[in-house]
Length: 168
Image (cartoon, rainbow, N blue to C red; front, side, top):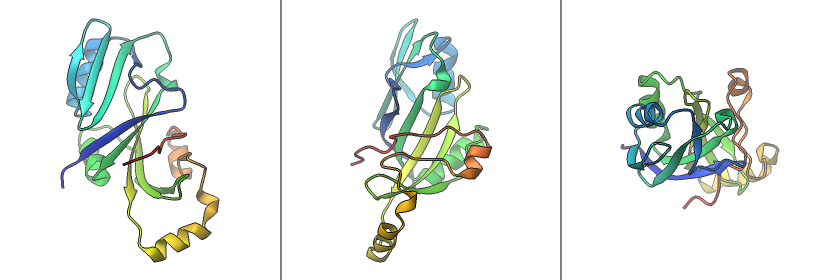
């Protein structure tokens, strides 16, 4: 079961084509070696990176990286978490969440060294019985906002707002 990146979506006001970094070369090294991205193009101040169908950009900036967050829609999220755990990233635990369109995702969070927060999620296919049950459990639906559970919050994991967009 191979990990596949389907898309990248901004969370909040994040410009995913201009994720802030202090220096471009070490950032490119981290995104390539640890996160598994390929470099599409780069210069002294910017880089365009891709993994699967997810494309992001880096930009040397004085903006606070801790204010930037990205949601990655992936296949085989469990395998990806293991891959990142093996790299020493220390991702959050996997957790399930019901999102705005009443679909269910399983996801985990991770931060890169500059402070940008990532949420990696995968939609879960449900049986008809589960769908009926999830319709009655509306207290977990945050109108498109993915919230970390209490364990995630204790670990200081960021909140992924408006994370799950129209996944195809």
